[in-house]
Amino acid sequence: MSMLLCDFHIHTTWSDGSVDLPDVVDIYGQAGFDVISVTDHVYNSDSTIGAWADRLNQAVSEENFPTYMEALRVESERAMRRYGMLLIPGVEITKDYLSEEASAHVLLLGPGRYISADLPWPDIFREARGQGAIVVACHPHYTDHELHDTLYFWRHRRQYAPFFDAWEVANRNDLFSVVSLNNYPILANGDFHKAQHLYSWKTLLPCRKEEESVKECIRDNRGVAITMFRNGTARE
Ligand code: ZN
Ligand code: ZN
Image (cartoon, rainbow, N blue to C red; front, side, top):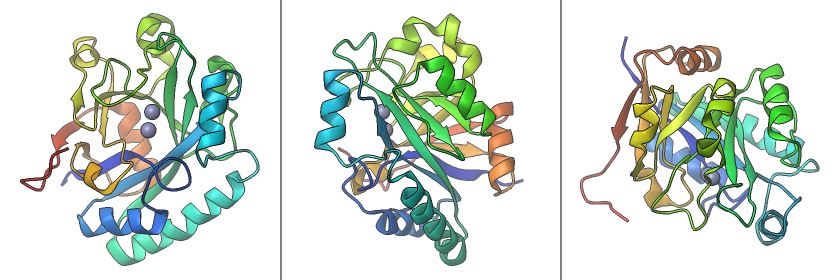
């Protein structure tokens, strides 16, 4: 079975990305990707920093969630028709606090209903699992690119590891060796916000190009490979 080239962490103009959803689909489709997940931010409002982000950026909210999901459904049909590319709808639950030690971001791949970022983490995980979503700890360690790192889950990894289907072992150009040293299940994603972020760490999965097979393969996490996708010259 050939490996599927995947990126499960992509932002569009639905939140703080600079490329709109149809153009994102065209960029990844033309680059030959098999599977992508669009994961725009849902921000917390229970801290000043989270509330600021929500106000400054466009964001996915309880109000626009149905419209967001409908836009993803329309584009996922076009992605399959035009490029043979599977698009899995997602969100990034984004809890930012003044302290990096308290901040954390989580990808939910394939959620069915809106989940508020103001809920406590255990409630978010329970709800996401109930909806059949894949739960991924994002950029769990120090990064080169986040203005504000998100260290909460790493600090509390023994408590939270059972809740995650995978941890990002790589995000954009960063590689988190601490994740593989702990033998945690892995994914590698681009955290795409603009066109040049296409060139970044990606995941290769040995499964069929269907949402349930992809989810099962992430959960099982056997044979998952990561690759640095470059065009030869593009670098930040
Ligand atoms: Zn993030
Ligand atoms: Zn992100």
